[in-house]
Image: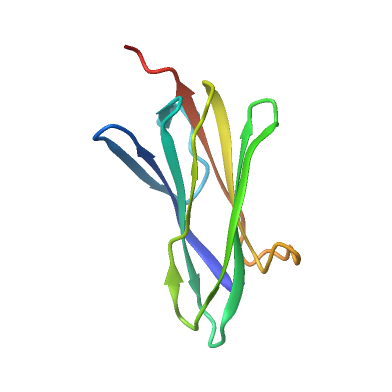
Length: 130
């Protein structure tokens, strides 16, 4: 594989609080609690382990338990030989529930050839108690 996802990191950004937890495989939904209307950053570390430049598309998808896509975002770029990068996409949940986050690294949006295996995790989103 040309680019390898090393880990995925979800950051919760709220009022004076931060949550970060690296994973390399799917985690249980009980491990991740987030709040409605607060930003979640979906981040992964990617590396170009080749001796040539590599274009890539970093894609994040968030789905409900009912398999409905509620967020799909991507960014594109290029990594020089032996370069690493930690792209991030934000998502703000508008409803409570269990969500499944998937991260893909492809050659491009137009050429969806995977450069690494996808990563996934599950997060719970709840209403903040006042």
